[in-house]
Length: 217
Image (cartoon, rainbow, N blue to C red; front, side):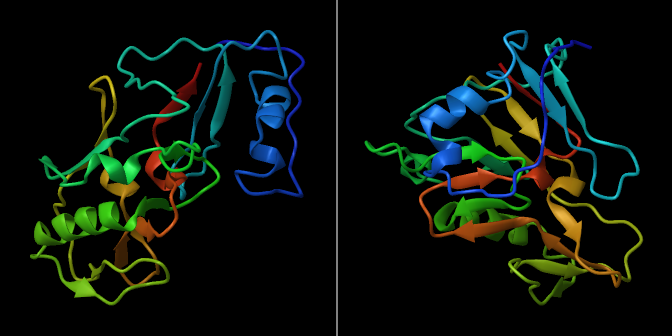
């Protein structure tokens, strides 16, 4: 485990949008985790499962796991990750995750957002493919922002298709079922933990990050 001295952590009480002060180049330069300490060349975090009694971890300068999946952090890019469901690549045009000339669009990884938000076209492709591979599971009505749910109260064991993200460079992150099919009540109702967005920015949220170590260098 690596170490870094002189790093202060605290809570934010006033937040703005990504285009506000907290997301401005000046703010990122002065307040990012790697900027507040010249001893930290990298940091990593691992979010435990939402029902776990353990604590999530935040580490500085730790060695990268040997089985890690890597992808570059880019200011602009022509496309985002490729999603697969049950081993099938989704039919998502590159333009869906493209960044325009003003820097808008693309996809980010955000530990402060719970549910992954994909642009509507990408979400519909993921949802419809997942639904086509789970016709054997009893459907249920939607819940809150989720529109694909199942009543699993009578089932002891189920099999669901694998959902994966394939990043630039060829690395593939295979999600666990707990990362994308989650309980929403105590009566056996589970929902696909993705949601659509009409905004330009897509976000990989913390439900999909749980149980995986995320490293920034």
